Length: 332
Image 1: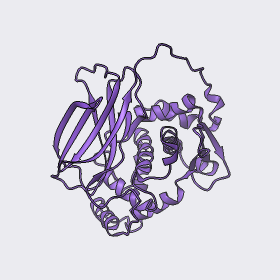
Image 2: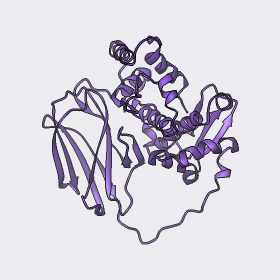
Image 3: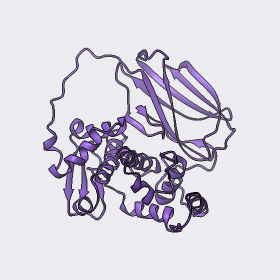
C-alpha cells in the first residue's frame, strides 16, 4: 500500500512552514532552497556519494519534465522510438558525459555532451530514426559514461512481429469506476495531455478499480496484493472528495494511478517507495491541476516548486523536496 498523506504533509511543511504570506515569490524560493540544503537527509541504500546515474527505465514516451509515458519492460513490434529515463546525483555542470546506444551489442549511435542539468534530479534521452521509421527487432543497450567511465547501462528489447494476435475483450467502465468518481476519471481521459490520457486508460485496460471509501485517513491510496501482478484498486476518501473540487480529486487519482502503473511494470521484488516513483506520481498530479486550470492550488500548496510566470514545475527543486520528504526511501 502506498500512502502519501504523511509524506505529503511533511513535504508541504518543508516548502511552506517557514514562508510567510508577506514574502515575495523569489524570497520564498530562496528560503526553500536553504531549508532543502541545510536539512539532514538520510540517504537510501542506492544513493552514492560520487557522480552517478541511477537505474534506467524505458517508456514509449516522456514529458519535458522526464516523466515516463507508458512505461515498458519491452517494446512492441513497430516501435519507432525508445525513451530512457534515469535519475542523476552529485553531478557538476561542465562534466563530460557520453550517451551511447548499442544494437545487438554493436555500436548504433552516440553523442558527447557537456553536463548542464545541475547536481541532482531526473532526466531522459531517446533514440529514433529521423524519418520515424520502425526500429528493427533486437536488443538495444543504453550506456552512460561520466568522465570517460561507464556509469550505468541497461538493455531493452524491441520484439519481432508475432504471427497471431489475440484480441482482449472490451471492459465496461461502470464495472470499475464508482459512479461518484466517473467525472474525475473523465477529466483525465479527455485532457489534452498524453500522460493523463494513458493513466485514465489503465482502468479499462488493466481492470483497476476506482472506489470511494470512508475507511482511510489519506486523500487517496493505491492498494495491491504484494507478490502478485494483480491490477489493484485506487481508493479516494469520501471526506476528501466532498471537501475539495473535482480537479483536485482527478489529480489525486492521477497520482495513485501512477503508482499502479509503476507496480504493474516493475520487478515485483524491487517495487516499493523511491524518490523517483514519488516524483513521477506528483508530476502526474501537477499535470492534472495545470491542464484543468487549477494553478491556484499549485500556488497555494506547492509554491516552492511551481513557477507561475512560466507555468512550469522546477523539476530539480521538486526532486530535492521529495528527497527530504521521503528521506527513508532510496532515490531509485
